[in-house]
Amino acid sequence: MTASSAPHELTGQEVPEPGRANYTGAVYGSLLAASVVAGSSAAGPYPRLQLVLLLICTGLVFWAAHVYAGFVGDRLRSGKATWQEVCRLCVREWPIVQAALLPAVAVAVSPLLGLGWEGTGWLALIVAVAQQVAWAGAAVIRVGASSWAVVSVGVVNLVLGSIIVAAKVALQH
Image (tube, rainbow, N blue to C red; front, side):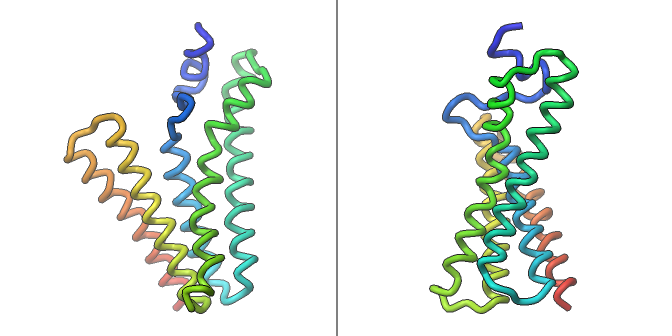
């Protein structure tokens, strides 16, 4: 086992090469951010700063949980736990946190757009679902998938996003 193949052999997942995105984490983080926005919108209006912090904190907690699970599940079992491996896991899972940033920015700038609480929730949700679809599409395009695969992945991600949108609508009424 070489150093470059170790992460794949231990986890079954490739660690992105420097400069390459972890699309899985970005899609997952986008779904997570959309869920946070949908759920928090049902609670009623509260300061936007709270939603910004909720998005970022949730992303950080799920990132830490993924790193921990990867470390315990893959690294300790193999007996090859090193700080270098922990750092690789941290980097690999970081897109989960990054995916919370655009919806958080949408919430932060919503007053500049003249949006009230409800409009802010919809803007953040649209941003989260749009980036989810974009990341999923980018992933399949990056691997050279067929046009059919790109469209299929886009549709599946739109359906997932639509389920979250439907949950938001149902929770508000």
